[in-house]
Amino acid sequence: MKIEDYLKEKKQLVDQALDQYLPGEDQYPQSIHRAMRYSVLGDGKRIRPILALASCEACGGKLEEILPVACGIEMIHAYSLIHDDLPALDNDDFRRDRPSCHKQFGEATAILAGDALLTLGMRLFGKPSDSEVCRAVLEVMAHGAGTDGMIGGQVIDLEVKPADRDQPTLEYIHTRKTGALIAASVKAGAVVAGADDGSVEKLTRFGECIGLVFQIVDDILDNEDYAVLFGPAKARQEARHLTDKAKEQIAFLGERGEVLTEIADMLVSRLK
Amino acid sequence: MKIEDYLKEKKQLVDQALDQYLPGEDQYPQSIHRAMRYSVLGDGKRIRPILALASCEACGGKLEEILPVACGIEMIHAYSLIHDDLPALDNDDFRRDRPSCHKQFGEATAILAGDALLTLGMRLFGKPSDSEVCRAVLEVMAHGAGTDGMIGGQVIDLEVKPADRDQPTLEYIHTRKTGALIAASVKAGAVVAGADDGSVEKLTRFGECIGLVFQIVDDILDNEDYAVLFGPAKARQEARHLTDKAKEQIAFLGERGEVLTEIADMLVSRLK
Image (cartoon, rainbow over the protein chains, first blue to last red):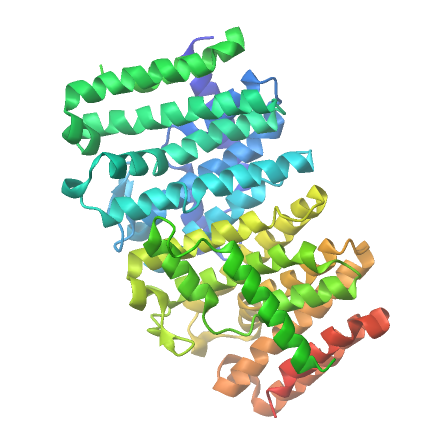
């Protein structure tokens, strides 16, 4: 199967499941459910849930076990975007070519819709059939989404002006703001598959590397942070180096790692 | 032991554990950890965590098993207050006689501190030694804190003006906004103790009743909602009736239910 077809198929699967797990628009109180659905079901590549699915499948796990977890991950991603867009944070009126959640539904509803998506996302981590797996996934995701992960990255991204960012600060933001949730998604997939500790470790490193690539490529395309500090040439080199490093980590998977390898190549190929 | 001594002892226990579970003020990024600690460790009766502890003990469970869960509950309560106080919601500058979180640390930090407390709170539900218990607690708390629970109550409280509240609307707000988290706290205690389904059910009813009492008493003292719609005399009568109903639910516990009974009496005694 070509990677484009794989991504399309899995995106459809995730979108269907998200539609099922999200409360219906007719469910009371309708306003918040509408806001939640608006923000989650809009356009989106579903890269985090697809990584969780691919990682789980690569480790021999079952799709029906990882699917609710993958949906929880996408809800947490969606909540972080809603809160990030708020006037007190990035103050973005648009998200994916549509009004951002607070522009569409008002600030109060947006704040609560974000809270509700985080709550529901966490709740879905209790869905896998093995409760030890649920506990492990909860720990992985709460760590990745918390103040040593995604939220920590957001805090420093808000507090330190771009001009004041030295390399350690930049690395902190990069490994946390987007990287932590991406790495946690890959790790959660391996955990749900019941992979041994060594494999979970390697897949987590893979996730960390491609999470960084994701951010560096964004910076190069937007001429921000990483591209500014190191120059675009060195930034490109670093993105390619990290992609190679990511692929090395999962070499042990052999053919089963093909999809993850292609996703890694795809992320860096945005630079072309 | 007198109930006042029990409450004091347990509050101390919870406060110590909260201090342990919250990241230190010197931990990077310091700003968010300071805001989290400020909002959680300030004054507070710790009524929800103490209810979880008391319910767990009444069902023969161990304190060390419920303690992290109780702390998670208090963090979720604290997050809901931080977000509730925001300018876009209730716009309260003060909370427990101190500047509210956003007045002290700024709106962006307050939003993220709330998010971080919800995330860490959920993470603590993975701490009990039996992973089936963790899964059950996660479900109970995420349900109680979500759009069919606490958040749902907040949404309707924001959307429907006091003057427009009929009885069904009021009941919805009352059973959700404060009631759902209180009921879930009592339920979580029974679940952690490994109580049978029948006992969990009865303790949940107890929690629902006292959660409502808590809100009705607040309304009477502040002359709001319930007191306005039914008049203070009928509201008082209802609070006493619900307290009796709550105590009936846990009659089966015999002597072991004494602390919960006294807490129920204490909540309604604020009316004196």
